[in-house]
Image (cartoon, rainbow, N blue to C red; front, side, top):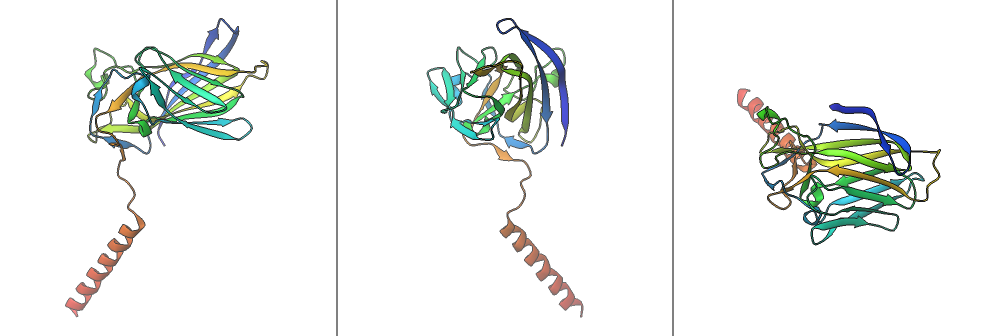
Length: 236
C-alpha cells in the first residue's frame, strides 16, 4: 500500500467554537480503477446522483445514504447524519456534514455516482502537475470541525484515465475522526472543500487489472493441463 502524506498535523482555529483541531491528509494509491474520459471540471452538487455515503458512529452502528439532487445542490441524508453540497461548483463551495451523535468515520464512494474526487492542486508552471485530461485544477481543504479534535482525510481508489494515473483522481474519500472529549456537543459537524469531476460515460469505472473469476481460473487450469497431456502423449 502506497501512502503519501501531503499535510501533517497542521492546526486550524475555529473562531466560532474557539478550539483547535488537526488534520492529516493521506493518499492511498493501491487498488486502482480505470475510466475512459471525464466530461469536464465544472461539477456541482446536483451532478453526483448515486454516490453512496456511509457513516460509522462511535458506538459501532453504521448508516448509509445515496446522493440525490435538487437543482445545483445535492445531499445524502439518513436518520442520524446529513452531508450536503450547495452553492455552485465543488471546487470552491463547501460540503457540510452534520450528525446527531459523534462519528468515528465517514466514507464517500464518488464512483457509485459517476464521479471522482480531483484531489491535487496542480502547479501551472509544470505541465506534469496539471492532472488528468479534462480535470483541470483540483482542490481539497478541511475548513471547519465541530466536536472533533483530529480529522484524518484519506483519498483511496486512484482512478486512471485511459490506463494512465495522473496523481489527482480518486474514487473514495474517507474521514476518520477523533472526538474532542473536552467539548460537550449535541451536534457534530465538518465542513470541507473537495473538488469533483464527472465520468464521461455512466458506469465507466472498472477495477484496473481485475482478479480473474474462479470459473475463468478453472478453465485456464484445465486448458494448461490438457496441453501438458497432449505434449506428453506426442513425445512418447
